[in-house]
Image (tube, rainbow, N blue to C red; front, side, top):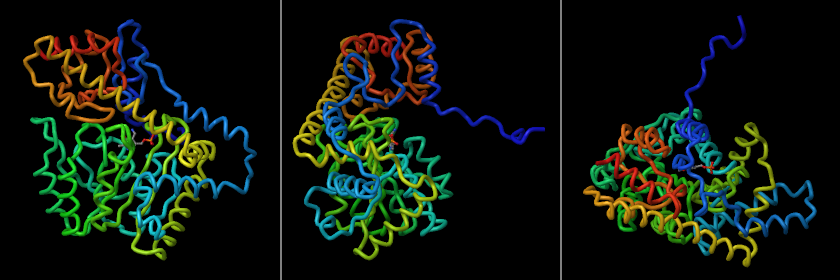
Length: 399
Ligand code: PMP
């Protein structure tokens, strides 16, 4: 008898499984469209030049032990400007509080914990579908989960009427999670007008919006445009929560840099919430590693480096948009009778292709093309040299 005899292996993460199968495949034409990590047009991971510049700057500084808290505060200050707007009055009024977090995942986890402590039993409403880890994060924080309708598989777009129904039918004062841009996995975002309607209804229902912003800049190439949902809710006077990740838009994957912010009614509440967040983080991991935080705050705090970053985000977004357009064009050139408009209507890293699990299995078996069985394509894995092969494979399995 061993201590862990009653422990059976946890189910594999669907994305890890895809990566493992891809790595084991020896076919030279293989393509990995599973993992949502940005790649350049040669399929290579990218270290942004702004990050290299920040590295050089940091290397030249002596890091003082006592600086950790100050470095964190600087990161929060800069991140919040990015999400809420450089001149947001709520920032000037010091009503937005926040904490540096272990990237987007850690920011969500901190918020889920805050929610459970101060609104015990109150559920989180998650869009259906959503990033699979949202379920795990709120489950592990022991917050009950509810879903709200989001995606319409027929139009491969937003089911706005159903979304609004679910918003209206939820009990007043419910917590809802939104992806403010580049929804994962669908690539489907509400329009500006639809966000305004959602915001209006949130006022009526007194719901709390929590924005999980993992892709600011990656959808449109414009950081402010991608934050438009948040700005609309601010204009309407909502109190909000926001998780920010620098994983994708700065290419900082394993550095794990993010920020959780909470907009409060006044400074007193903001101070109290901050101290609670600090206490939550303290027992989980004390402080996050400081190097990545220094990188991000260096980039955001230096006008030249920030301008370079803004340009580099645009390059990533443009490449993704170009690959979407090319993939659609190739499918149409092949004479596919199906409608592929959703490839270019959807935005961000992911395309919810509408391929069935059987079609995905055929892509793997016959063409060595890997993606999750829900048909989600990571456009970041599509390149000028593999897009034609990908299009003909998709055409073949959807005939
Ligand atoms: N939220 C969403 C919607 C995501 O897609 C991701 C990344 N896959 C994250 C949060 C978290 O990523 P990270 O922890 O790397 O910032």
